[in-house]
Length: 251
Image (cartoon, rainbow, N blue to C red; front, side, top):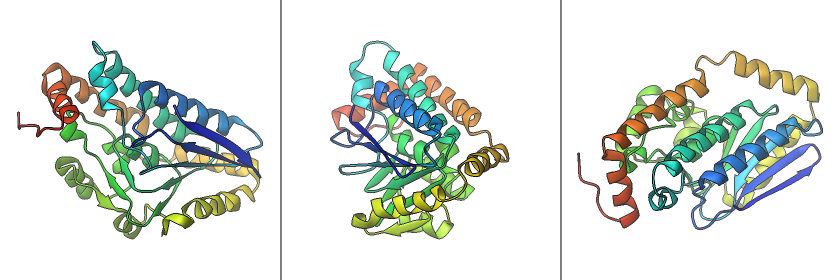
């Protein structure tokens, strides 16, 4: 799995580069979780920047891996791996800045929704295509980005929303040209890193403590319905249609 990690001036930059679309395999989600956790535990680090190379930030889970793996190991692994990665971002001991470009879909919403600050390149699209792919999940995290009724519409329609709309709602901090995205994220991280490191860590801990929703438990509840869809046959049918590039009929 393609990840690079660099640390400079108290900021760790984690970059995902897994062509063609940055859809992560089971092992990739677990590896990302470990990288974020280790970065946060490093007492020399005051902030983490999470970004990606390639066409877009993240396209979610690798459905082709899931459908080509016999049995349910890949489905279970993807669910647990996503849970681990989202949890790692949320519980990272230092603030996480997500620098998002191109598209942020499915599992990408989980990463970004659990981040502390979000900056996006112009034209970036955020969406949950789960219902098209026979799954449910990350509405928990989308609800941290958009108003409640907008979240429901985005889940039901599987249509994406532009970064400029999220900026208007206040969840995306800045929308900048793509060539300025990395510098913008690093500049924000540098401001955070200029504060007292012990104080920033306690600030992160305190803000998590006052969240009105337990994101870990909420997301795990959603995941249970993915397993129900799979047991009913609807999930596997939808994923097969996706892999084969055909329209998934209503069930």
